[in-house]
Image (tube, rainbow, N blue to C red; front, side, top):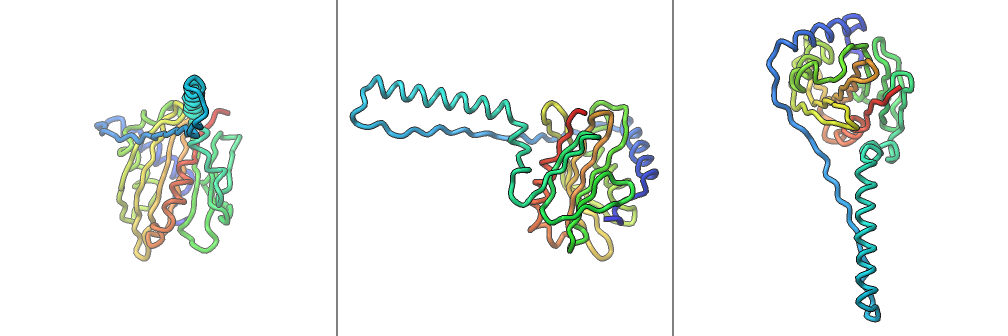
Length: 240
């Protein structure tokens, strides 16, 4: 984990300087991922002794219940989207000082790394880690720094991987949760003796710039990617 991090002062300088330059670059089109929701109401077939009026009344009740269920489901979308804390095999983290939350795989241990706000790692696989960085900013929205592709490329090259590693951005997307814009991107960083496959999620809130990054050895990506996506999807900023 430590090999993928810079010192705190250099880290902050590179981020701020790089994002300042982004305002002079052209903006790319970005993709949006949307979630689809399906609410299904099932009705037990009416018995042959039911009258037509009873049957119609029963159907109206089912339709009404289905409508209410749909409304409740959609108005509480954020609760469903971040219900990963209830999933077996994950533990929740809530930082009430900076205002963020996420989950991490059960069995990972918290460690202290200079310049990182939170770090959890697997006790056996050294490249399987999740970290959160928090920096002050005067910006109000992540889009002020540029498109998902622009910001992702800058972070990967200047912050998330040392210059000696070959990096490749696989995908960068924009999405919105509870009215707040997030960028999520996937990338690989290749060192002489290993390749790390990683995911990052970034946003702005409470006057701070947040980054969550999680990854694993490329040879274990197929086995770990679902867990890593669960962690990234769970990351959320809240007001403090």
